[in-house]
Length: 154
Image (cartoon, rainbow, N blue to C red; front, side, top):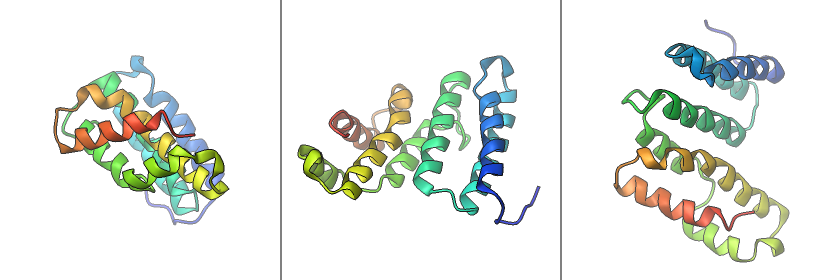
């Protein structure tokens, strides 16, 4: 299954939507993993065709968190809560200190800064779902700091 990176974003997003829908269905059992892998492939193709990386990551992280809840955590990259937490932290477009400073007066910020804060909030949403699967480690502590700030983000 090798396709050129170009192509219609909408085509690949349609493939993503269908496959991620089935991947989220608990009655699919272990088949959820197959649907999810196909969905992740389609999302990567949409990204290669021009889909914004923040939007793609938010979708990707939500699906992975759902799978961890449905199938339980494992060491595989798709179902590993530690890997997901690290990926979420790496995808955030701001440092925690900057986000905390901007959050105090976000209503007076420039539109692009408010959008960046909102992107942080959206990327952090799946972290709430997997937090109970994370042992206390530096990654979990960093995530806890972000989750405490998340409520203050627009």
